Image 1 (cartoon, rainbow, N blue to C red):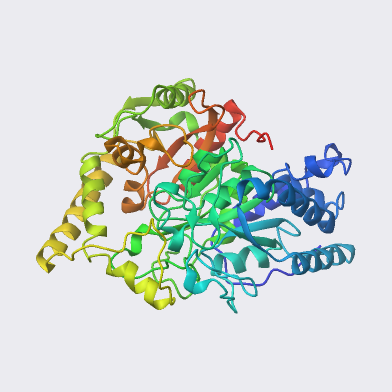
Image 2: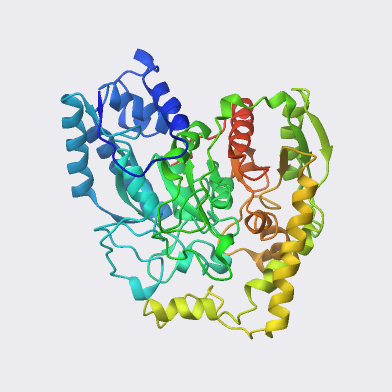
Length: 502
């Protein structure tokens, strides 16, 4: 077969090649006898193999995804823009290439969606803000271009709060597209800001999505919707073409990563997305290791269920201890511990984020011509004096250094994503101290440090009537392979994603 994939030299190509090679080994067990309903539940790895082996056509797969979207989207409002005619044309082209013995890359013919905060050439890209309600970019964001060049087919865009930051208590909500809901419970939240992404992937309307994570916006939706998600190490995946991009005082908070139903899919996608793009100057040429080379039995594991402010619910405590048990059983050294000054880092980042008096938010509104902001977007505040701004910068760096030194004694952290399962819209406890301290204070610290962190489903909440529960896995900088290996091990014990009752 002739690969026609042509783009920048990709660090981590060996990992992608290994994953791609596995696509051809699935064999006749995956026959084309799947119903459309079964077909859409396949993983990225499986569906890529089925297409590549000509056991199903890309056109049929795209049609099956749109049929599924037609069923579930009226109930969850996850997909907010579609490009059906183009997607079907690209699928027909993908099938024609295969007929000639050619393949574009490891994602040949695989349908996907992308968070509406990413630019997509020829497809409306609102970022949830009224000033961009009809904006159609002429160019794809870097990560969108890369997965499309690897053969993936864009189905449409998924809902996000305004600028990914303006959902407030309603999480994934904006004035253009309204509220997105969880596929596992009518009227339940789907988290945010990659809430539409998490919801449609969990609902089997898309094989994968690309999200962004400023304080937990990939990991929260992965937890809430029972799928796998990864926030890579800061500097691994470029942010070019994302509405809250890079540069300025808040540069290192924003990271880009994949969401999918299976951990193996995340490992296939990450090498395709990563690597410098001659635009995002924070990107570093650091190779990605393969998770298969990680000796899980040798990992030194820290775990905690208390962020220094709020104790998590009993059922979240239980799943953390359940996952700790999986690593104890391997012979890992395990200790209850958490990074020093954990709550202090969260509090310092919070103060730092508002230190400009929210001028950052007001500039975004003005830049994109938005006059009316979403109710959840915080645009008011008073700028601190320059001496205080400098103090906050220095304090964050001081705590990050101390935490990095602490991490030398461990390879992995198992911890909560949030303090309880997701609730309904609106949620009564939203004004309580527990919400702000517990819900928002268990993921953003790892955006501040830049460490890689991922989530996978572990179980089901009884308190929230069948909503998913997941685990938060963190590793040392650039050890995304350790995160992926640990997530895959947990998924193998628990089964991971379960189809929702839609």
